Length: 93
Length: 196
Image (cartoon, rainbow over all chains, first blue to last red; front, side, top):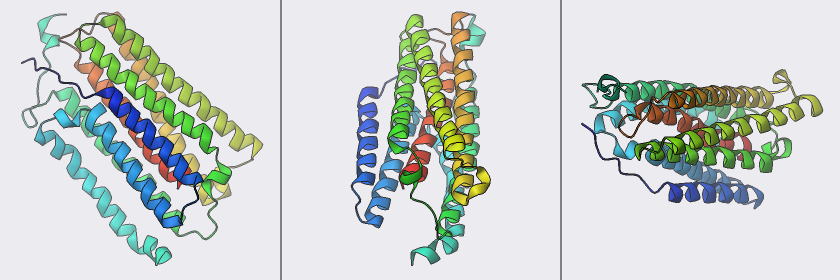
């Protein structure tokens, strides 16, 4: 019943999160072209969110059924974003 | 503790302890709520012609420090879980208190930020879409941190009653899931509301 708990290297994850946060703030104050800033910040934020969910919340050790249960409803968010795209896109293009 | 409590029943579908499945289901529904708020924020912002540059209105360095505080508290939370899995009850209690302290520090800094924006800058929810979305998103998240601090303190209190051990720490992990989720959401809010 009792399973062995393998631990991710928590300190390493912590330093990654810290480093990415510092880079994010640096990118804002570097005044890069607008769209490179946006893309860089969104990618770094998603990377940090993934690091937390995958390691701190132990998703990497969970069974596929739980991953499906958690991941599938999040597709609704993609749907929501796509639904709002006409409103968002007319300002971009 | 007696064996009946130590053995957490598993859900048949996921093969995972039920408490954990329940918490994940709650977190998924909560992330849809946050997702709805963030999408509304994005659509409103893109539809506005006079959106201010957030870093001109908000204190980005202070909030970056606050982000750092929350990430540190996530680290102490996993350290606490790690301690109890090795049977170190004192270590669990120490790290739970550190984690709660991180949450309290976050809330204090946010209270200072709100005080500045509300009473020095004179911003109100009705002033603009920027204010409306900023206050709704950050206060909704702040309420989650507040609930998280209470959750952590209750977990600490249960630990002083001898509820947790090396073989029975499932509820500590479930409390950790909630706390890390609050950290995860803040990472997104910080990027989208303060930095972009």
